[in-house]
Length: 199
View 1 (cartoon, helix red, strand yellow):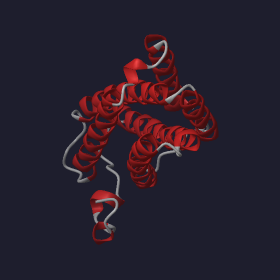
View 2 (cartoon, one colour):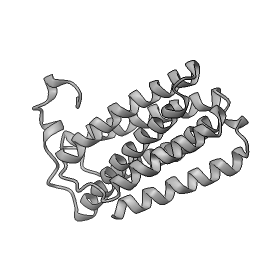
View 3 (tube, rainbow, N blue to C red):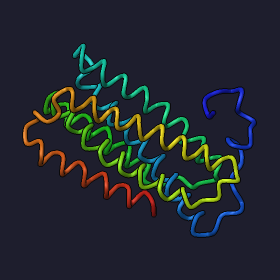
């Protein structure tokens, strides 16, 4: 709906519900603010990884495929943010620098570490999208943008979990100090989510 020009003028992609409670509006604001920031960071993680591993035929191709999906996610999140009049996080530039740095550093540690980074990030993001889907169940469904939003979040969650599976299939768990790396990256993602919700 958000990428097809034929649907560009439909209420589901151009209007925001007015009959939601202040608490629901705050939840929607926080959700879309953090989702958009997360997609910015994801794009820069893959950009950093590709800068280091782009020469590797198999790994470079995998990273490019996942990055292409993240580019689509970001384009849709940008449109959702405008549609629902959500203030972006002031941490966008931090997300870019941190994402690129995380992607490049883990890629410099080796292909397995780059995949471990993807595994850790996508585990947290998959859980985060699941939480949002549960939260959106309580929203009024009579405005066309809400069912569409749930469909978008569900689709993006499935894409992120597919990236997680891809990382595991390509030996993420063989990365040096896999458990430690996963814990550090996962904890960093959780902190970033909480910060972007608020700032």
